[in-house]
Length: 180
Image: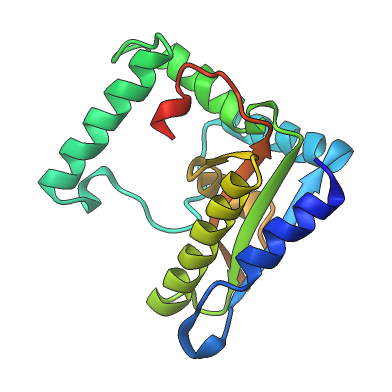
């Protein structure tokens, strides 16, 4: 990806609105060998099975209507990938590929400094949204990934919380692309 394209994308994302114009986020982009080292570390963590839960997660944290939406989306996405509902091995392999950033040459991580309360989390959400829109406007495919938050303690300083990540590459013909 040309450097001027990356600059345009992150300049736009950095101008996202935030409470009291605090812009409590920090963005880190990894590419090349650094991206490969991070992907290898994430896959090793995934193989070990323990997750850190960068922020609390539980299946019952969602209202019934939201659980139903997640299940429907999950069925569509995994169905498009040819992964059956009880095929844990294929799901694990898909997650492992996610932790390799699906082969994208760059991965961006959004962090929020401080207590990570509701306002900073909303602010970084606005930044993430603007980042994804800027990538789309520049013809760069993106893939937000919440899975990485389960391994946040492997690479996130204690004073920060990872609130989102995405990887970018040229648009792909992935059969699941329409689900992202």
